[in-house]
Image 1 (cartoon, rainbow, N blue to C red):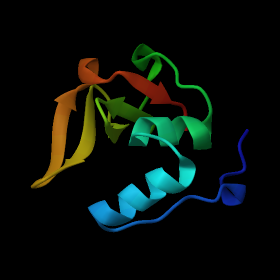
Image 2 (cartoon, rainbow, N blue to C red):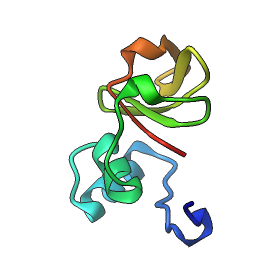
Image 3 (cartoon, rainbow, N blue to C red):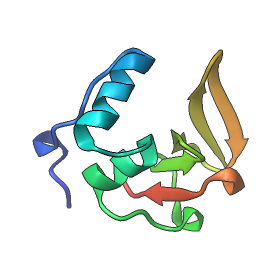
Image 4 (cartoon, one colour):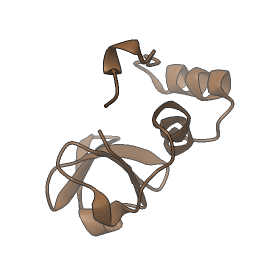
Length: 89
């Protein structure tokens, strides 16, 4: 079991801040950052409610049969079948 309190998570509130985080960890996109912080991804078929999932370069959360990730105008809801990877939380 992971001790989430020991994980130093990067924080940002803007696209520029997110770009700095990616540069600091030397990764090209958010799913690569998730792999650095959380380990190797699993197939999206194993995603369960609350797990981190990727859809393209975006990260989101599994909410059952759907995933939610941030978009330009708020949250974007997609079918879980759109996920390309998951990280068990």
